[in-house]
Image (tube, rainbow, N blue to C red; front, side, top):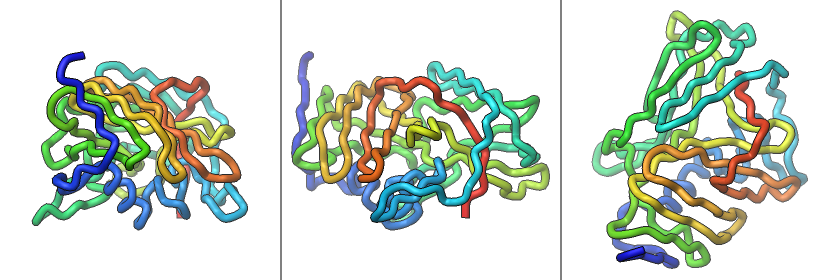
Length: 238
């Protein structure tokens, strides 16, 4: 591969890198938070390990198709009377401040499902440089530093545009959650840092990233290797 860049240390010239975003998310209601690990999957990480946080997962079957940034899902709304699905991501705000849970994309929920056409590329305000995730993490890519977006939250709203529930995609009994990541070029991220392991081979455009949370440690493994058995479900959080 020509002009291959291998990064294994933080680039201090970048205003905001992937590691910083993940750490800052951990200080709010992030999926990466040590005290709120797997919010979407209804798991809370405590010193003793994972416990259920009181939310409900139904046993209905869903189907998923994901190709070239187009996500098509069929599922029952489980009585929540959902009329619209809204997704959220991290974005640049005013004065280069980072804002979390900014509305990214919405679509109707009808006829037992929904379709999302993720933009390629996303709006500039959602794009962040992928710098090093730490000295023990290796990144490989060509040319300029890649940029990425992570869709991190799905919410359901009723016909009156009132929030009614959250929406999760993963494998309930295996503590697996699936993210949707955009990158603007090929990038490989490998290695372990703190409580997180990366085995990512990301392609230009939208990728599914499978995150497995180990019990009872709460350590997370990010991988692009598919894990079978994933389902969608609605739930109430909080």
